[in-house]
Each structure stands twice: as C-alpha cells, then as structure tokens.
Image (cartoon, rainbow, N blue to C red; front, top):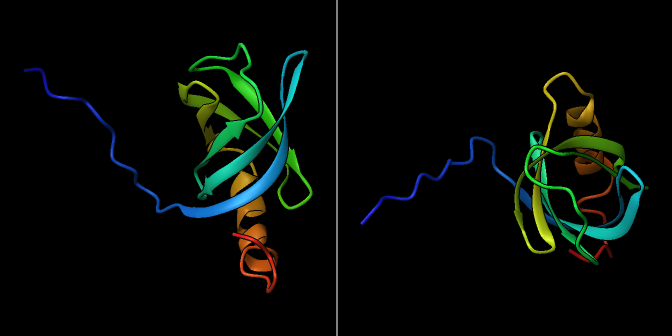
Length: 108
C-alpha cells in the first residue's frame, strides 16, 4: 500500500461564507469562499472552469476586494487558492477578519 503524500497546513484557516466573482482569462463564474487564511482560501464555484493546478485566477468580493493567487488543488467545483507571498492579500484578509468576519447578524 502506498502512503499518501499530503501537505499539512501551516496556517490555521477560518470557516466563512463570502460570495465572490471568479475570473480565469475570459471565463467568469460566481463562487463562495469556504475557508480563509493569510496564505490562501478554499472556493466552491457555481460551475466548473477550465483552470487547473498551477493556474492563476482572480477572486473578487466586497469584503475582500480583488485577490489573485495560484490554484493548489482542484476537485470538481472546489479548489484551493494560494496567495503570492509578495501580494497584499494578507492585508486584505486581515481587514476582512477585523471588519466583517464576526459582525453580528452575519451568516457564517
């Protein structure tokens, strides 16, 4: 039996439900952020797109603004996105947690 080579998460993630718009070149779809950390996020898309592991996609929402990153894994309409270390995505995520995440009345 072959052992699975799974990478352990280095940064804790928080569950959330952020409605987004997702863009990959000329493809556009809606999605929802399922969990979020300073290094990446997991998305569920409303329909599949042709992007694969290693592709760069853009995610936009009122809470996060425009964030781009590289797809680390894909499973049907779910995918994991890793932010570039040189981007300002961590600042946008920190702002989301400060101003939106635990706001009373917000569905989580």
